[in-house]
Image 1 (cartoon, rainbow over the protein chains, first blue to last red):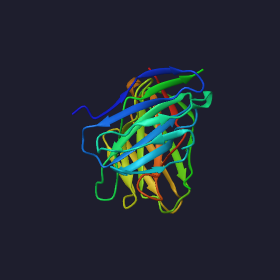
Image 2: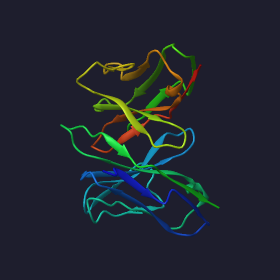
Image 3: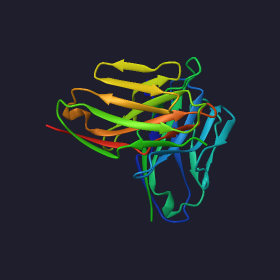
Image 4: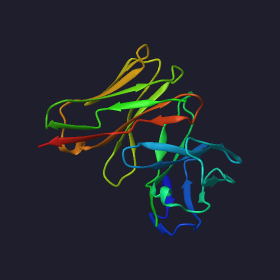
Length: 114
Length: 112
């Protein structure tokens, strides 16, 4: 199993550009999430999905869109990049285990917006 | 929503000593408390977790305790080694399956 994979590893965007961060998992997990990590702020939830076709907002959703057309893939779209979106982005997946959900993280995408 | 506070933000210990990191949470409905270790430039990795029906859990040199009444939980690392140096995050899950809230992290340095 590859686990959770993310592409690209690094990306530089200019303000106003759009792009999609890719996330895929091969563990047949129902649940997937996107987090951003900024210095001194831990990880903050952007969007999450509880299954194909079902998504919801997390703590910091503004400026980002998601969709979940398959169980395996959960792309994150930046509509019009802003310098405030400079961050490291992590995708995570999990499955139900008796009501608890251990999350497995991808390797991350480091995004810089100039 | 849930609020998780984590202390200290940095911690230096001598190799072989113990390290303790403490977290408090606000939502009494939270029932799952994982701890993650993140090495520089790497992804967070789960090292131990505790569920709300348990007061303590141990895995070799790592232990976690939970006090539901006081709404706090702690990570204890004994006999620290240089490879324990990393950033550690606590988290709490409450208010629905994916509402996992993370603490702000503790940078642990183990001095040889």
